[in-house]
Length: 108
Image 1 (cartoon, rainbow, N blue to C red):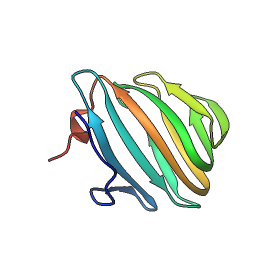
Image 2 (tube, one colour):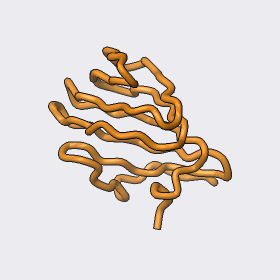
Image 3 (tube, rainbow, N blue to C red):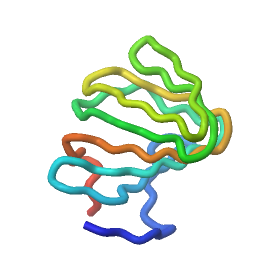
Image 4 (cartoon, one colour):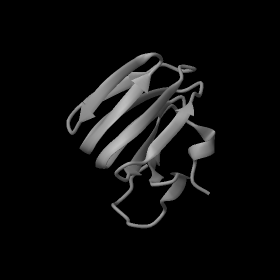
């Protein structure tokens, strides 16, 4: 699968947070998250492992009981079924890969 940059296709996740599935294959799915200053990603968990990279911005990411200050260029992995949440400090963009594929994130 190949995709070109497109401004459309973003889906609201929470107030101030949108996501867009960029590409997916049999085993992985890559998503871009646009996170606005002061937004909060509520605590949640899912069976997929999640690996992320902060393209721009600044946030605090809590994985299990550990809190990380995340700045542009930082990356993380969240094991499946581990609770996590984030507080966004400045407008941010994150790219995350899920494995196995999150069926609920498939386009269409």
